[in-house]
Image (cartoon, rainbow, N blue to C red; front, side, top):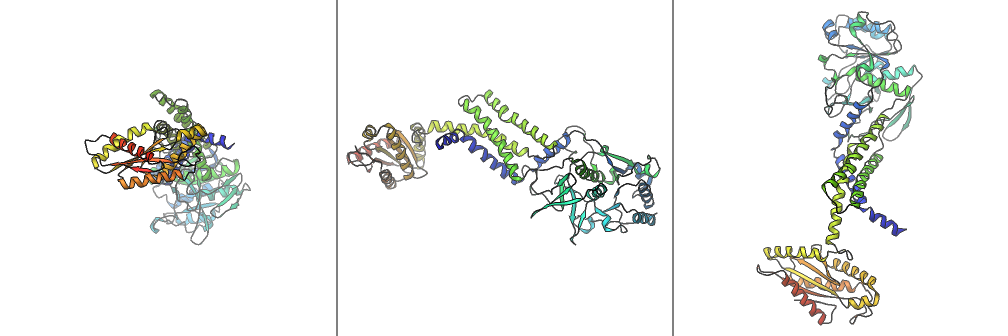
Length: 583
């Protein structure tokens, strides 16, 4: 069983080595944040590609557009705003969200507006609570109780786009304050008998149950993010869409009575600016520079709050998916899987066509090993996104591509091993030695450093083969080669010179050091204690070494040093073998 396992490992060794190594590189790249923006860009693509959803009939947005500003000026006077709230209140909506900062009077009509604030129990005002300085903060309307004040702050990514919903924050006094979208949604759901319940609390996060939805907080490395800000309680914002996904009514139509009867009954009414000149607009995944063609304008803040509200209500009542991510260890398992797929496809091609590395063949490898799996990767990930799961795409694509491209290099390394390694002893073969030795000889002549060569021969090896058989002889040569390798330095070359002969090239090594290494080789082989009953000098296998050293002059040829080592080897045999002789 173990031998079969070793054979299988050897058979797939390239994949076993390549795929995890590439994934480790991808992990380092991802940790450094190199893949964050490509992953997020793909997320934006998926958001744009999704089929259009139906409009949410539970939410109406009262817009303040350029025509309203032309008619009523800016800021909208208090008496006009009070009149609009009074008309909306008569529709008996479940909640009214006033997405307009009103910390200062805008006369005329301030007293009238205060009265409407006081008598409209389901009206939620806003404040701005996040800012680097106090000047960036905005207080809520002074006459609205604190339990009817939400914050209007949004969380932008490094590219300025809003992809996450900030549901709540913890104030300095320890109290939890809800965002506008979240507070409106909870008011609406409360009349449906649905309340926010704590489902689970671990050391780092709270998980809540809201009707059919389970709400989990955003973590810093979720999806394609790397070390993102996790302040407050955030979730991914699963947009329903643009203005056409909600009922919209211009403010002037409200004030002029141009709306249908009971148009806002049991709904959530949001009041906010959509006029371009007010600059209360933000980039979203729908606004992407990666897409071709005319792109929509930035989305008004009031529409983003409407999307947050719609997301929570739809998830709680209908089970509309919230965007979720896999645990980090499963994400890396997903990446590893695609790395293995890329390596496996490429490996199978090269396994069957090791010596057919033609351009057309490499093109087929590119198509089958990279392009087709990449298409499957994108397709599967997009399908998962439609179900509410954001899977990494760019990182597994990098793992797949690099793994597929690394296999040809691994195969080239295999070819190199076949061409330059002795198949029996796994040290360099005569062919490699014949290439290496002239190069080192030329370099030594230029630098005038000493060069040493040791020629080794297993004593009475023919008798060993005749006595113990060729398989035992092969094992003996393997052990001797390992012993020689251990006895020399990492800068030295050990090669099988022929039959039972080995040669060692020692660059920049003087005569005395080379002789010591030769003695050490003899000692290491002797310590193997390989029985040799037919040896005429010992009961175990021994080795004879001929050592030669030279600082070659420019006119000398490389064969001179090898001939000298060969002469020293014959002298070692003449002296009784199992020794090293220096010439």
